[in-house]
Image 1 (cartoon, rainbow, N blue to C red):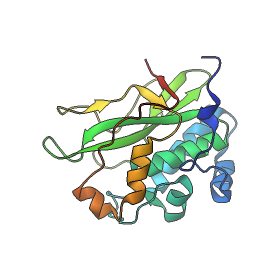
Image 2: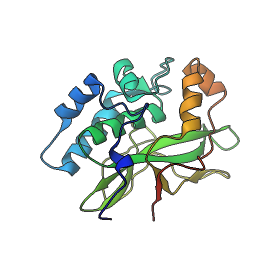
Image 3: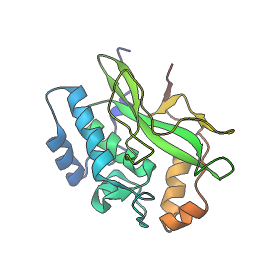
Length: 202
């Protein structure tokens, strides 16, 4: 793919990579090649931003700068920060989503956010920086997709698109959340937007 829409390197409310602290971190993670930079950004967000549920953090973050300041976020906020760091370093990137059960078959569905980035040598690569734990081991392995969760239960799916901006309904509902405790009781099961810039991954 020789030309990508400019939306995949642009800022938006949730991807506020012009924020000075996001800019500072992005510069500190820059490496000699886009691939090396992308790996450093991925591993930093995966390891340094605590997943809200894993670490029993109740505060809600949405925007990239908010997740960075609080040091915590759900997968959605962590994906906003990862994309912000990638785009601040000139790496095209966007948002991918899964519909998953929150815990196991029969539990409520939730929208799981992850990231796709574009590298000259390999094209689009989906990666999941939600954070590792005993049942999740995600590494940066372009050419070999390594996602946190398989699609296993009825009703689950991996959406094939990469969106230039986060799903508006998902962002709106995240902003309305009073706490992560409230999310765990009633998780957000958002619908894909009917418009916006998106590419379908093969």
